Length: 237
Ligand SMILES: Nc1ncnc2c1ncn2[C@@H]1O[C@H](COP(=O)(O)OP(=O)(O)OP(=O)(O)O)[C@@H](O)[C@H]1O
Ligand SMILES: [Mg+2]
Image 1 (cartoon, rainbow, N blue to C red):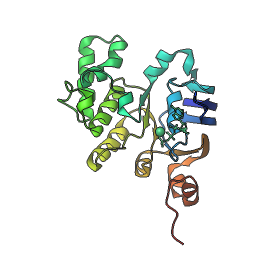
Image 2 (tube, protein in one colour):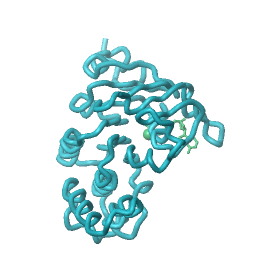
Image 3 (spheres, rainbow, N blue to C red):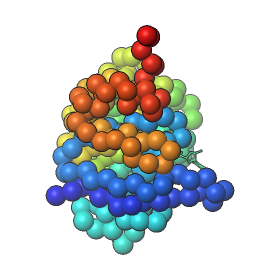
């Protein structure tokens, strides 16, 4: 079964900028899909449709159901880790941010406390629960953002630039963390090493279009394609 099905999706921002110009995409359950493309290609715009934050023209289905038919249900299934932690963290403490989703779903307090403790531990933030998210370093904020999604046990986890701003050790820890997640994963990134490590398939986006799709090894070996879409430095000579 397809976890995600996007059909001929168009989106124009209120100021008239075209974000998506007709994108179709299927992500089978259990896949780990990489999404690459230059700045402004439309990656974040597409990801924001997958749990209904944006609502363009065309179809977006999650496990067969149109996202906008039941937004709350869709958001329990699709966890989105934003590119910018400021979009994800808005509570007075890290604990409150990670507990926000489960509390909204009405989980009992004890279950929330256990789940938050586990989520913070899995991103290396044990002991930081009482801190203000604004006082964390960028890398720590990225970890806290991921914890807000991990805590929900989502069947689909969507990451927008998960490794940007992380130090090398943190980056590899994150790659391991994402690898071990038992979910369907979609990862928009400029980090081609991450794609090589984690993704079975890759889509390339440019200018609001999906311009290529294939097995990760094939797409990443296609120097001409990577150059054409600003993903690799042209080889000398
Ligand atoms: N809030 C907004 N208002 C108007 N235009 C926007 C907005 N957000 C994005 N855009 C435009 O939509 C297009 C797609 O942007 P998007 O953020 O989806 O690209 P991206 O592939 O995620 O890029 P990056 O690699 O820089 O994160 C760009 O032309 C961008 O300028
Ligand atoms: Mg983006």
